[in-house]
Image 1 (spheres, rainbow, N blue to C red):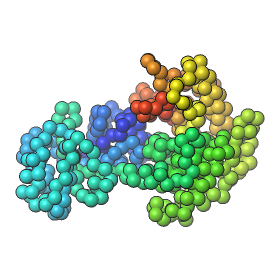
Image 2 (image 1 turned 90 degrees about the horizontal axis):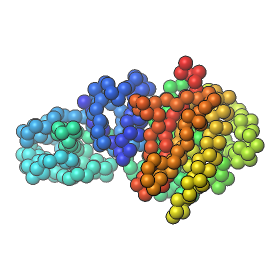
Image 3 (image 1 turned 135 degrees about the vertical axis):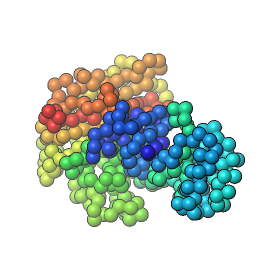
Image 4 (image 1 turned 135 degrees about the horizontal axis):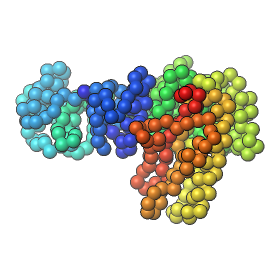
Length: 397
């Protein structure tokens, strides 16, 4: 049995997990021995946490803990398998830490690092390879050993090091970028198209984790300028980042012209410009994966309700056009974010999905049972990333 420590948006972690497993076998969150709460997922299916954007770490369940003797056995077994000197223990349950230290010393561990109600990160994991996690799940206590952990340092480095970076020009959360990339099926998909690429956060993550060639377009000339700077920096630091330039999409991207589509969008001839600039691409093997345009940057005061609905109408019109053009190109799937705006009280302001897809050749698919979108947001942000996935109807008939 495997366990996964879910990130701050558990539903997104579950949708991402399901998508990664669906690549080889269908997964239903109500079956297949899968259980979850707001913090943990327990299942008999394995996915690499280090390849996910919304999971903190993963590992193997040793056993259910009903007494101190059970935990002592887990510690002893771990030492027998790897007789090292250091042990880390993260306690997210009512466990006596002094007793744990005593047990660990008795079996042979020399240094024991105890974290109370705190998650080990990649830094802890690099210093101490063996980490036991003791946690409560539906009223029962389990002990597991971490086998894979998300490396937050690579995201932090990209956030701070990419030269083209301005929150007002589309700087994307990189862990969110990885999560929505993982929502794509990628069965027969060879390429990714990010039509609202901004400064290239999703492209940078794609180069690091799945290395598929990317078409990058945006409505902003400033964003395209930032994108080019960031791609130059990634290529110069490719070896250090773990990217093989000969096998990655970096050179492929640089040979393309990141087309500014502002005029094209206004003249409704985006389709012709895309075909002209990317004539060799087989769009029937291309997935659209994008954060999308989320509206203008708000100041201290949220716009009035009529102003918000006007913004949402503009975003809806933009996506209607893109859905139409994507269907003509034969693009099989689209994973994207729509903006939703937090209301002072009550439900957020949203785009009507039924209205958006009315008459479209695309159809929404469930990210979770009976759920067609997942919300991603931070407490102090007024904007919600409403994440959904649509598939060309002829591909699901």
